[in-house]
Image (cartoon, rainbow over all chains, first blue to last red; front, side, top):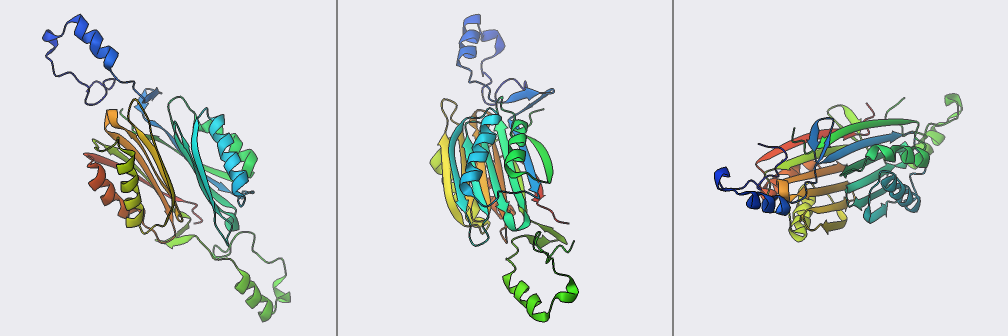
Length: 154
Length: 154
């Protein structure tokens, strides 16, 4: 398979029957490829799983909403929607920001000074650029980071 | 560290100054521990990253919303909020369901018959129970699954 050819878009016409005109028309109609190529790998997007330990400011949904929006913008993402929920009595917060380029989420356990964040971004956004924002907002003593490239074609 | 003692809850009183009464009072005030223990490991929750290839029904936000809600309920989760966004002209859908036990998300690339799903659930929910719902809804030819235990204490 030619990895540059979107699945399902391969012409069923034998190549000897295709004129330059039909090839040009097919190219004009070919949908934009939203997958990215980096380090010789073609994939849908980068998914970071970030565990914050010894973290602060984990109880205030307004503060966390603002921090996650700042994190999204730092990565070059476009915010479409956000929703944050404040649990009681333990004070934890769960929230998501839906992006034009996927999403970010956070779930906090203030009683353990722990937060689990994930940042999934496709296109030209770089979720690594969100990490300094998380560091400033939550001042974690320790960060564990796992990176997955979702939708790898090769 | 005693892993059963929530961080920040260790008494600063020397043990010889603690009476049975003060120990009982401390136990009564100790917050509920929301971390889970499984296979000898204590952690915040299970996070599944699921790549669906050769999948169908990736263009309809209403259908996808219903499927993701069914997936959440199959895992034993409680739905707090959901939001789905339909992109054009490529027809992809991005959406999240915020749960009392964390979240699930989906992002689809119909032009590649690809969807990236993540299911993060804490407490007694089991996100593996959502997989058959995804299989029925999207009929993928191939599923790639990665499991992470977030917030591992030991």
